[in-house]
Length: 64
Image (cartoon, rainbow, N blue to C red; front, side):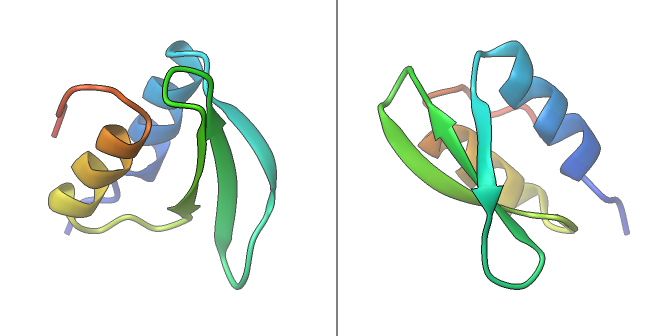
């Protein structure tokens, strides 16, 4: 099964999103200046649907 996290983080950084802090467990909290919200990013995204959901929270189009 694929791990979407590296590509997801690359897309988030390219869009101007910032890592803010560590969250609970293996999650990180990121901030999107486009939407103005903070959202969690898991360190091991195995589902393309979940990865696309994170992109949606960041205000970006689906990419997986």
